Image 1: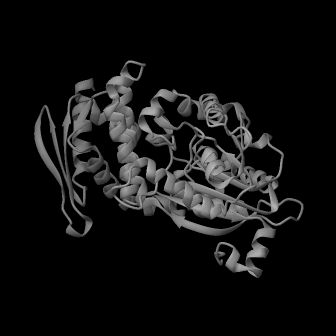
Image 2: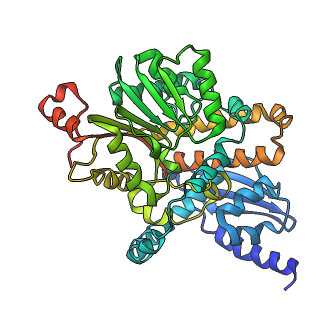
Image 3: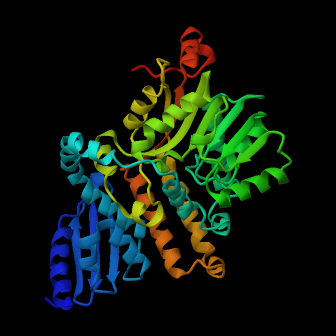
Length: 424
């Protein structure tokens, strides 16, 4: 079959699938005309998007590559849409109906598939390469996208009128309350980012912070930022893998870092955290999560984010993290117990909208330092893809606290002085 014939056949199949859209309507215009698909459902807050197809090869690419092809073809300029986030929210609404069956199938296969998948050996060079592929794109990019805190994680908007910086600081203070930070606390941060948490914890709460990253760009930026702030007596920036740190700390924090840890390494991550914590220690995490029922499916799947944005990434579930934390004790020592859970997912859509607006505003300036139009379109799709997932509650983000045995025991005897324990 000729390329033209393949494209035409793929178009027929794809437009047939578009007939299953629910919760809104999609208008598609290509060289063969204009058609509208879908149905509205008032209970689902119906949406509409209008797509213009510029390249007929799009349909075959979508059938072959799914969300990877969707995002890459948008970056390549094969199609445009009047409201990218609305279009992706419609896609989520339509695909969600298939998740239950696929989730059940994956859970049935897990006893066979997981032992085979676990044979993959740990590889620190691979882990570092994956992290640097995203975070070493250049500090100039992130300066333009993020606010002055340089926090690259979900902010918390106490008011819709809050600036992104105000909301980022509110997130940091919320984590500080989870960790019960105070003067003299010895903190380890796994995943420095650009130093926002470390500087905030030192200046506002008087903590001694050791923060570590395997991104060279982040390491240099955070080190210089700490020096400029005159905080070298309170903040130590290290370029080490967290597995190579052996001191003891009162608190450990990891802010949207666990997504870079492969699911096969969760036991290693929590065992290391358990070893790093004092007996009365506390681990706080902010993590993007998938529903517990979907984890067996999503951990094996390759979507647009894994293929084009975060190579090697894996979104955990709360149950998967907690199971690994509970089993983190060695030589008979108790593991880490979940003692706090706060879902802040509704704030991520707004965070992503602010980042996307910053990116679009800075597009011309970024182009002068090597971030061309294709990159801008790829990242616009990335932000909208995530925004749609959070707004549709397909994914969420949570703040979690896991306590070492001594902390949990103290909490039971003096609950007024500690976070309320989550009862299993």
